[in-house]
Image (cartoon, rainbow, N blue to C red; front, side, top):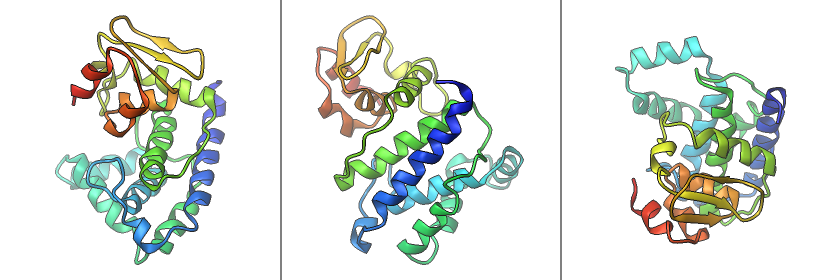
Amino acid sequence: MAKADVWPMIHGERKALAADLEALTDEQWETPSLCGDWTVRDALAHMTATAKISPPQFFTKIITSGFSLKNVQSKDIATERGGSPAETLARFQAEVNSSKHPPGPTDTWLGEVIVHSEDIRRPLGVKHEYARDAVVRVADFYKGSNLVIGAKKRIAGLRLQATDTDWVHGEGPEVSGPIVALVMAMTGRKAAIGDLSGEGVATLQARP
């Protein structure tokens, strides 16, 4: 996938996620997501904040938040949640075509939209077919990166094999499964481990 194709893919995935969330009940919005202590609503508010921030704005926020990324995220989520789930969704819908982002490689934001969309969809039981080449690109990015999520360290010494596309990485005990599940496991989402098989699964499960 060419670099120029990344943002249209991000925009498309945001629109698809917004459409999937339109019919949620207030109770469903408070479902725990796969991302730490965040609810589904919190995770979407975080995605909205990411789509609204530029590098200069990010640096200002991190400085005024005591150089704590967690503090920045907590403040942004509180803002972007709005007063109701409907407002949370509306705020996200207003940013689906945004190409603004914090500092970092472009592939970071493709990974963010795919992983956080799964953080939201999986607990809700919502199925979605992601563009295979986009997920492969994210897997290729994460396999060599320890930025923030530590994927490179988490999968060290394992052989990852996708069962639904032509992608393989590493040497060692095998972990195989759908490419989306591999990406989620690479980012530490234990909920995806059940979709994987192979002698390396126990090792991956045990790693933080």
